[in-house]
Length: 116
Image: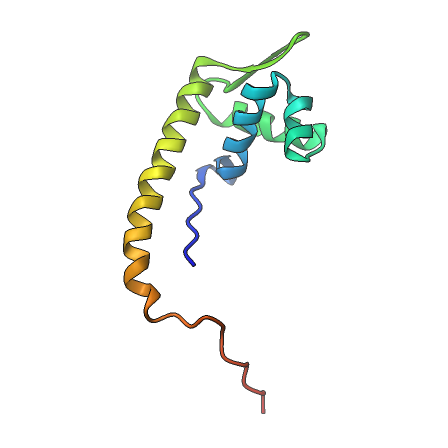
């Protein structure tokens, strides 16, 4: 099994990764950070902290909030679209390369050797 996870860093912070992209998708569908948190099974505080990191890491905020809820900014929609496109391209290429390795990988690891 091949798992590819794309993370974009800003210093030591993860500016975008699969979880943050899922959070942005949930904000789009739910219209609020709290609704997105409920949909993803995350606390409001955790969601807010992730949004805060994203808003601080990019050249423009990705999420705008108001008394009516939350929405992606134009930059947020652009970043999410570009990230999802990158994920698709990398996963397609990775799946092709992964098939070449499948023939060599065991279904389960061998038992660990005892230390002497």
